[in-house]
Each structure stands twice: as structure tokens, then as C-alpha cells.
Length: 101
Image 1 (cartoon, rainbow, N blue to C red):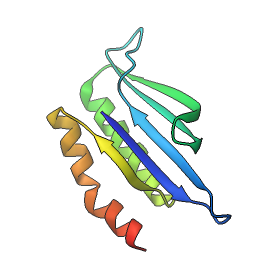
Image 2: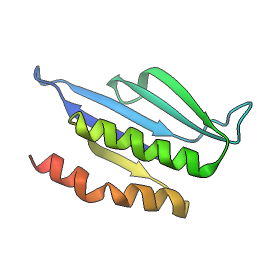
Image 3: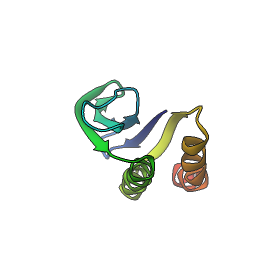
Image 4: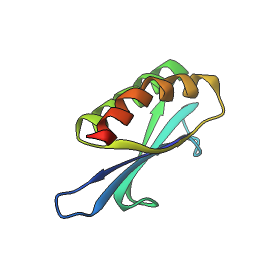
């Protein structure tokens, strides 16, 4: 799963925030890696680790919701697993509405 959010700053530049689950953790079974910066391929990063899938999915929802409130919109997303598709689908309408404004 990967999701990239983007917002346009007042100076016209773009800022990116990406989440993915490609990197597994050493101590917990479920992880999310967040990267953010002025380029879509990162800058700063943070790894979140979770003991259960439901904890990870709750955090994913929370992180996406927080960024949308800050003016980001979903720029790109990809998922094959049903639980991720469900989470990303929840934000489809909200993200599209933000983009239109």
C-alpha cells in the first residue's frame, strides 16, 4: 500500500506526505512509514510500529485525516489488500472535495 498526499503552499510550491507499508519492522508485525518534504520521494521520515492490523489501520486513518485537515489532498494511492482499499475508499470523496476547492 502506498498513498501520497500533496498540498500547494502559498508560494506556489508543493509539499508531499507519503505513507507506505513496504518496510517491515524489527519488533512488531505491522508498520507504516511516513515520508514528507518538498519532493515526493521524501525528505524526512518516521516509522510507526503496531502489534495488530487494526491498530495500524486506525493510525492510517488518523494520519490521512490529519493531513486532509491541513490542506492536503490524495495525489496518488495504490493498494491490493482489501483492508487498505476500504480505508482509502473512505477518503475518496473528502479528498476529491478538497481538490476542487
